[in-house]
Image (cartoon, rainbow, N blue to C red; front, side, top):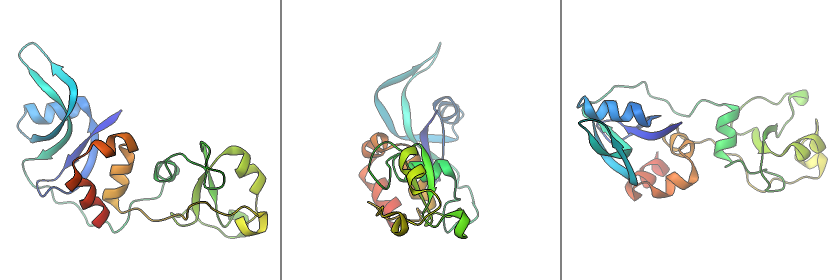
Length: 170
């Protein structure tokens, strides 16, 4: 499970890593802890440190500029918080607003999370044709916002306020 956010030396989100990988980065002095889990600790023979939730790299890593996060089914489900865009129940599938049969593409603005029942009921029709209005419009998350969403709503609320604001501005 990837539950530790990695920030660049400039405090911009880069990726998420496993807890073990984050500890290795800290112990090898490649990263410092910006925020830790309040109750979890990582213990070893000669080590006792708080489990990191957010780490920052000590050296700046140059990354290619990305205007938007890459589209994926998992990303759509995470963006919509696993809630159906038609009824609000738990979503397990991805539905195309403009169906592929009518030329719809796999894009952030054309896909929404959907429960299997609503996805089947809508079939190869648009929401207007099926009489199923969207509860929430799809949007394109920024790469930083997509990364924070991937950490989960519960974890995101526990992140520092400055980090949440920085992702919203990106």
